[in-house]
Length: 380
Image 1 (tube, one colour):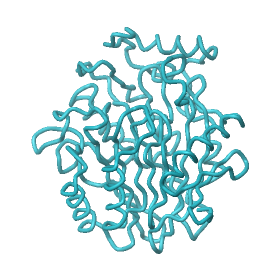
Image 2 (image 1 turned 45 degrees about the vertical axis):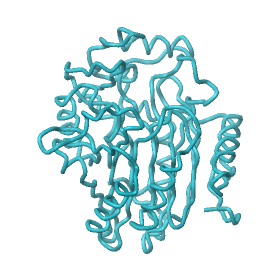
Image 3 (image 1 turned 90 degrees about the horizontal axis):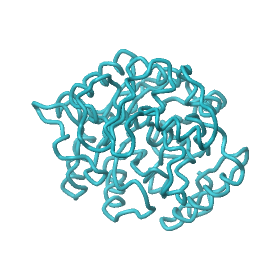
Image 4 (image 1 turned 90 degrees about the vertical axis):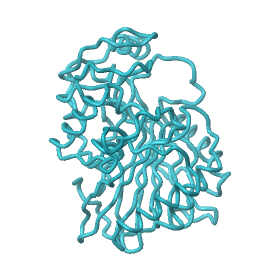
C-alpha cells in the first residue's frame, strides 16, 4: 500500500486518466517488446519515438521505471496518499496475437516494473486496449500485475472475476472497493465482454436505469458499512467536452443509492467537466496521463499534452468526498514535467468553464495547483 496520508481525518486517493505505457514509451524503457506495429500510420513503435524527438528533442534510452512519472513522483513524495489508482490502457505482454483494430498498445512484462516504481496499488483494466493482444495478452497482463502485488479491476479470466471489485486495505481496518466498467461508447467491441467461458472486460451495453439498478444492488450487497467505494468507468469519445445526460444520471444514481464516493471517468484524451454532487465527486473525463502522442497533430486545441493528478480527499467516517486538489503536469519526452504557469491558467479557465455548467468551480489555489469550489463558494 502507498504511504498513508498525513491527515488522519481524511483518506487521500490519487487518481489519473489513461496511463499508456506501450508502443513508443515501452521502447525507451529498459527491456522493450519487438517494435513492429500493425498500423496504417506507422510500422514501428520507434516511429513514435522519432516523432516525439522531432518535436521536443532527444529522449534517453534504457531508462529506469521511474523516468516516465517524473514530476508526479515528486508530488506524491510531497503529498503522501493512501491509495494510487490508475487506468492502465496498455496490455502487458509479449504476445503476438494482436487484434486487427488499427492501434495496439503493449509493453513488455519486464518494463511493468515502472508501475512498482510509482507504488501503484490498483490498475483499472476495463478499457479499449487491454485486449489489443488477445486473450493471451490479457492473461499475461493479469499474471504480471499479480506478481507485482498490484490489484486489478474491470477485466479477468471470467465474467465473475472481471466484475469483482479490487479490495484495497486502509488504516483502521477500513477498505476501499474499486469497481471498474467499460462502456461500448468508448469503442470497445461486444466480443471483448467477459463471459463464464471467455476472458474479457466488464462491459456495459448501456447506461440505462436497469443497468444502473443492477450495479447499485451489487455494490450494496457486497460493501461493508464503512467501505469507501470508487467506481471507475471508461466511457465516451476521445475528444470533446459534451457530457451525455445518461452519464450524469448514471453517476448521480450511484452516489444517491450506493453511496459511491468517486466516479472515476476516463477515455477522453483531455480533461473534462468535474462535478461535486451530493456526497460524491464525479470526474467525467480525466484525460491522458502518460502517452506517446508528442509530435502528432490534429487536436491541439484540446491540449492533450497537459495531464492532471487528481488528489481526492474523503472523510473515512462518512465516506463523503470532502476535497479535491488538481496538480497540472505536461508530457514532454515521454515523462511528466511541471506545467508552465500559462498552461495552469489555461487548464483552470477551461475546467472552470465546463464545470460551471454543473454548479462546480475550479480555482487556482497556489503553488501551481487547482482546487474544486462548490456552488456555495466553499473550497472542497
